[in-house]
Image 1 (cartoon, each protein chain N blue to C red):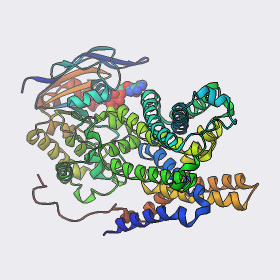
Image 2: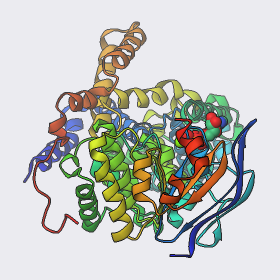
Image 3: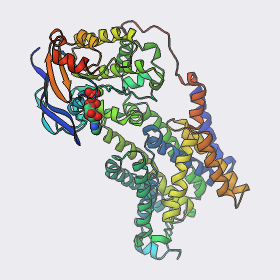
Image 4: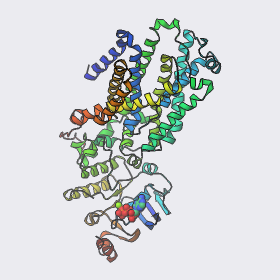
Length: 248
Length: 349
Ligand SMILES: Nc1ncnc2c1ncn2[C@@H]1O[C@H](COP(=O)(O)OP(=O)(O)O)[C@@H](O)[C@H]1O
Ligand SMILES: [Mg+2]
C-alpha cells in the first residue's frame, strides 16, 4: 500500500497571469483511492491535465511507477496504464455502446498487423460484461450520443475499465448524476478498486461522496495545496471548512 | 443463400452483363464504377474518420501520370515521346501495352501510398477547416507541378499510347477498361467493408466522434489517420492509369488533378448517399452519375446549372444523405434498439 504509483512533486502551471497550480505535491499509493477536493476554479482539472500530458507543466516532476512522464504525450501516458475521464464526459456519440467499449481495448500491444483484424469474441464478452456491470447492458446497441448524461458517465467509466488501466483519474464522477444513482456509482468505484485492483485518484465536488470513498484526501484552494489527510481529519480542518464549505 | 449473398450476386451479374447488353454505354458504365470508387475512398476520411479532404484527387492524378510514364517509358524515352506528341510514333504492341499497364499500375500504387504516408503524417495533424483547406491546396499544387513539367508534356498534357488493334479480341478498349474499373470498385468495396469492422475501422470512427478522447484512451491517432489515407491513395492511384488510357489523353488539370470536377464530386456523392456508411457512397455515386449523364444528354447548355441546383438540393434536403435519412427514420432497422434480453451466464460479475 505504500509504494507511490503516482508521485507529483512541486508541480506548477499558469495560464498567462492565472496561476492554476502552484507547487503541488501529491502521492497516490498503489491500490488506494485518493481524493482531490477544492472549490470550483481551484485547479483540480488543471492538475489532472498536467498529469496525463495534456499540456506542459511550468515546474515540478510527475512520476508514474517511478518513471518521469512529464515530457510524454497523452496517448503514450495512456498506454503506460494511466487513464483519465473527463468532467464534461466524453464518449463516441455516433457509435453504439458495444463499439465504444471495443475500441477502448488496451492499445499497448497493437501492431500494424493486428490493427486490421477483427475483435476476438472475448473482447465482445468483456465489453458486454462491463456494460452489465454499469447497468447499460440493455442499451448496448443504442448510439452512445442518445444516452442520458448520467448513462454517458457510466459508459465512460466502463470504457476506462475496458482499457485495463493501472490507475484511473476520475474528474467528478458523480457530477450531474441523479442523486438516487450516486450510491450505485460509489459502490462500483469501490468494486473496481477492490476487485480489479485499479488505483483511483478522484476529483469530487460532493463532500459526502468523497468522504465515503477515499482513504486519503488532498484539498486545493486558489491553485495551492491547503491540507491533506484522512477524511475524518479533513472534515474537522478549519482551513478546509473555510475555503471549501465557505466558498460554497 | 442469405439475403446479402443474393444482393451481391445480382449486382455482380448486372455488373458483368451491363456493358454487353448496353454496348453503346460502355464508357459511361465504366465511369460509374470509377465514381463509386471515388466516393468510397473519399468516405474513408470524410465519412468514417470525419476529415473532409478536398485533395484526394491528387493520388488519382499521380497514379495516372506514373502509370502512363511507366507504360511509355518501358519502350520509349518519355521526354522524346511527349515532345513528338501527335506524330503517331507512340504505338505499342499488345504485349508491351499490357505489361506496361500492369507494371504502371503497380508503380502508381507504390508511389501513391508512399506520398500519402509522407505528407499524411504532416497534414493530418491539421484539424477541421485547416485540414480541408490544406488538402485543397495540395491537390492544386500537384496539378500545377505536372502542368509545368515539360518531361510529361507540361500544360499541353500527355497522350498515352492508343489501345493496340491486336488486343481487340479482348472486346475493345472500352470493354477492357470497363472491367478494370468494375474489378477495382468491387475490390475496394469489400476491402473497406472488411476493415471498417476491424479495430482500424472503429478507431476511424472514434477519431471522427472525439479525437481528443481517442488520444486520451491511448489510440495511435496519427498512425491510424495516415494508414487511412494510404488505403484511399492505393485505390485511387490504381484507378488513375486506366482512366488516362480509356480517355486517351491526360490533361494535368482537367483529367488527372481534376479538383473542380472529380475532386468535388467525390465529396458530393458520398454526402448524397450518406457519409460514414458502406452503401451510402455506392448509392450516392450511382444516383449522381446517372443524373449527371441525364443532364448532359437532355439539358445541353444548362447541365452545369442543373448540376449546381442538384448540389444545393443535396446539401439542403439530405444533410445526412440517403442512408443517414433512412437510419434516422428507422433506427431499429439498423440495430439501434433496446435489448431486454438477460445477459448470458457468466457475463455478470
Ligand atoms: N486552458 C486554460 N486556459 C486558461 N485558463 C485556464 C485553462 N484551464 C483552466 N484555466 C483556469 O485555471 C483555473 C483552474 O481551473 P480548473 O483546473 O478547471 O479548476 P477546477 O477543476 O478545480 O474547477 C481557473 O481559473 C480556470 O479559469
Ligand atoms: Mg474541474
